[in-house]
Amino acid sequence: MFSGLFSSSAADAADFAHLAQASVTFCDVVKRYGDRPVLKGINLSVTPGEVVAILGPSGSGKSTLIRLINQLETLTSGEILIDGKPTRQLSRRALRQLRSRVGFVFQQFNLYSHLTARQNITLALEQVHGWPSAQAHTRADALLSQVGMADKAEQYPDTLSGGQQQRVAIARALASSPQIILFDEPTSALDPEMIGEVLLVMKALAHSGITMIVVTHEMQFAREIADRVVFIDGGQILEVAPPEQFFQHPSHPRARRFLQKVLNPLHQDAV
Amino acid sequence: MPALDWQGVLTGQPLQWILSGFLTTLWVTLAGALVASLLTLACLGLRLTGGRLGTAVVAAWVSLFRNTPLLVQLLFWYFAAWNGLPQAFRAVVMADHPWSVLPGNVWWFTPEFLCSAWGLGVFTSAFLTEEVTAGLRAVSSGQREAALAQGFSSWRLLRHILLPQGLANAWQPVVGQYLNLMKLSSLASGIGFAELTYQVRQIESYNAHALEAFSVGTALYLLTGIALGLLLTKLGPTPARRRKTNTELRSEEPC
Image (tube, rainbow over all chains, first blue to last red; front, side):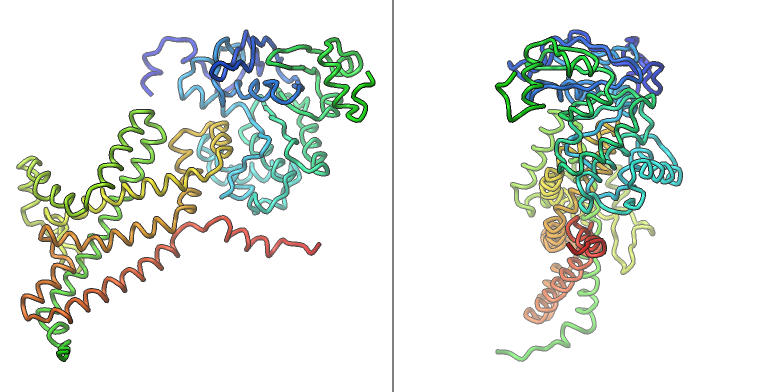
């Protein structure tokens, strides 16, 4: 509490309660686990309201990339600017504030299993944002309708299907009206017939003003909804392009091979 | 085998002693459980947020109080630590206070009661800390990350997400520890604390009704244990699985 009073550093004083510009900028971002490099110098700017799809093979570092934004992982070196402000050396308080402005949707949903769908949404509103319970309740119900889950408000996560759990998780991530939302392979743990319902919710969200960074294997989502595609392999960005260009004329040979394997898995040799 | 004379235990002065001892046991159990719960919460908080130093302090606490006999600990608190407290404080405790009397004429603001409750609480907290920690570890790390990503502080994460689930996971062993606390309060007779065991022994030296007196004492411990066990199990958090079957029965559709 007192560190804020006596600190003169710009990072500590940074106020993330409201982002003027929901932009995210990576500057020479490096992440190593021990000696193993995961990201080797990433430079990328995401503009406010943009929808960016991050593609790449497993283990390419794409999940790590978005987990660095809200500091579920810590940077090894470099800097990430959010709203033009550095985020590397935030006080605990400022970090919590930043996290509460950035929604995060996990591959494994990660709903609080002791709480109902509605309580999953109201908990942070009441405990982190200090909303009165009646207001949080109303907000939760509105969000649940938005993702088509209004009739499941009283159910516990383990009684919901994967697709339903992920829709509740998206509603939870939207509760605090974040200006940036990050998706970490949101459909990878779902049965094939449930992927559509989650992608539809995400499609409705895209271009509503919120900045979306989506790590995904859903090529159709990347092609139809993203403004830009970022292709990562081996901890490096190999290609950044609008989707039509990326899918029709990928410029990097590694990207061409990746697309060939993903889009045409039975004929891998026929390039 | 000599004929049992229950009249010698269940009337007059012996009955007074048994009732007073029983109530004292109940009160010191309640106070000890309160101390144990608060200390456990403090240990868990320290372990979660205190960094390396906090973890080391909790490890030392658990190690010290889990690996030494409770009787020795009680003797230490009563004969050594108590005398280390400021004279002024001890004088206040020794004085008579009307607010010190609990229902059943049990005095709680006395060196014996305070040392017993504290000693039992400290001892039990060492066990509870490890058992609840095991319960907390069973909560998926994904939920922890989800809460951090939503901006929860460590304390609120513990209070609203980890503890409700961790306690539900560990509830049966936790109930066992509170029952242990109740039974181990008998060791406080070793520092002259007039709880049930102390009073039962007093009957034995008063009219030599040892068998009757210890039978009554045993029955009272047994009944208290059963009642406390049932109560804590009923009051405890509902495990997710049991709750799930209820909802499932309602929403399950035939396939």
